[in-house]
Length: 199
Image (cartoon, rainbow, N blue to C red; front, side, top):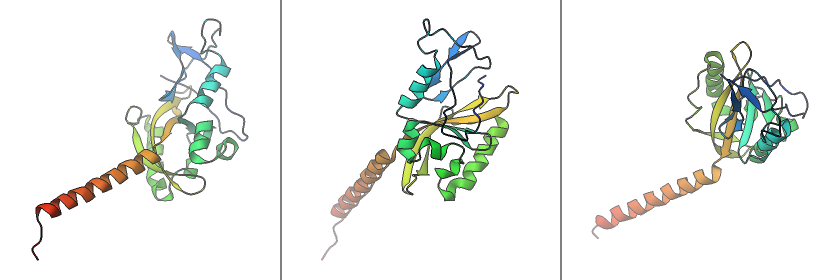
């Protein structure tokens, strides 16, 4: 069971993330989610190089993938530099705001249905499966993103927050779409040459 609480931040201050141990095993920030044990015990940096708050904060800030944490209401409580690079919003602009700032309006109703269901049940199929969806940049242009999520739990065992690890796949999506378009054109050309019309 994982546990953490990340309150909505009223300012640009980043919530502290510490290396912890749970059930005798270390829990660290990972590329597919941030896992924090129920019993938070700080480790000695001399014996565990990933134990200091500074090290984990540096990891979150250095990752090329966006790390976004939102609380039970859907308000953003953590926003790393990669999230700013991908979506355009600075940390101070994003913290405390709804996930609607990066969700296309046409998809917001469906998004919140799934979000609140996950918060209520503690079940998500996107912990291992990658979800690919449209998103929106601060300046309004469309993005194609891929992400996985991890659930964070409060002391009462209820889901308190959701972590999303997000990658910008806009360029790859455009490349694939152009390739499919080209293949369709070639198939049409081959079909036409195989069945020439008579004058």
